[in-house]
View (tube, rainbow, N blue to C red):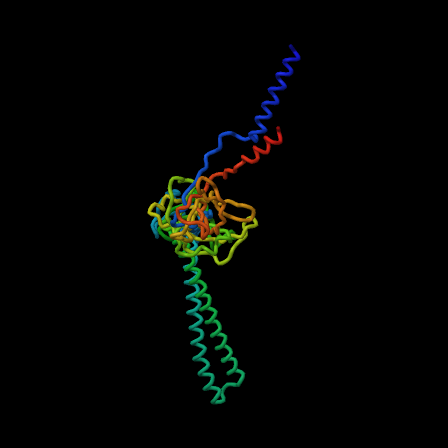
Length: 381
C-alpha cells in the first residue's frame, strides 16, 4: 500500500506541473483593457512653485525718544489709522532736554547779538582811524591794528552764527523727540507683533548704539502678495499679467485668484537649484483670509493651447526609443508612433500620428501568447 501511495502522489505532481507548463504559468482570466477616445480640446499649461504670503508694506516702528512706556493699549491684529497715537512714553526726560536746548538757543542768540554790536563798533572806530591816519595823527601800525580787530570781530560773528545754528538744530531734534513720546502709526494698517509692553523702558534711535528699541511691527493688509521661487526651467514662460491660482495649507478647501506682478531679473541658488523670485498679487475678494507668513502654492497659467488633439497621459507608451500609442482596431492593438507635445499632467498633446475619434489603450497592453503555449506543449510531449 505504501508503494501505491507514493506512485499516486508522483502522478498527481506530474499532472499539475504539466498543466502549469502548458498554460504558460499565466492567469486564465485576462485583465480588462482600458481605452479612451482621442479628442480635440484646450490644454492649460501651468508652472508650479511655492512661496510665502507677504503684505504690501511692513515696517518695524521705533522711536526717536527714549523712556518708560506708560500706555500701549493695542494688541496684535488691531487695525490702527494713520496718525493715531499707539504708544505713549513718559515725557519727563525729553521735556528736560527740550528746555536745555531752548536755553542753549537763547544763549547763542545773545552771543551773536553781542558779537554784531562789537563788529559795528569796530567798523565805526576803523573809519575814524582812517581819517586820523590821513591827517597824519596816527601811525600805520595803529591803523593796521584797527583793521585786524575788525576782521577778528567779523570772525566772532560767524562763530556766533554757527553756534546759534547748532543750538537751533539741537532744539529741533529735542522737540521731535518730545513729540515722539507719542508714537503714531505711520500709515493705516494692522499690528502684526508687539515687541514691548507697558512699563518697559525703550532706547532712542538717536542715542542708542543698537539703533533703538523695536516697539511693534505693522503692515498694510489691503494688498497681499505671494513671493514664490520659480525654477529656472519654467521662468522663461512667466510674464507679468498672467493669471495665478494660490492655495495655502491653512485653507486647503479654498483657492485664491491672483496675477503675476513682477519677475526678478536675477536668480538665486536654493539647495543647488537656481530659482527666480516671482511676486504674485492676490486679487481675490477673500484675500483678507491670507495672513503674512503663510506657506502658499502657486500655479501660474502660462499658456492655453486651443483645439489640439489630446489623449490621456497614460496612453503614451514607449517602445524602444520611440514614443507612441496603441490603437484599438478590430479588437487588436496596434502600436503607432506619434509626435507628442506639451502635457498638463493629465492629458498630453499629440501633434501627428493619430486622428480625432481614434481609440487608444490607456491601461497595460495585452500580448498574445498562444504560440508560446503550443511550443510548450510540443516540448513537453
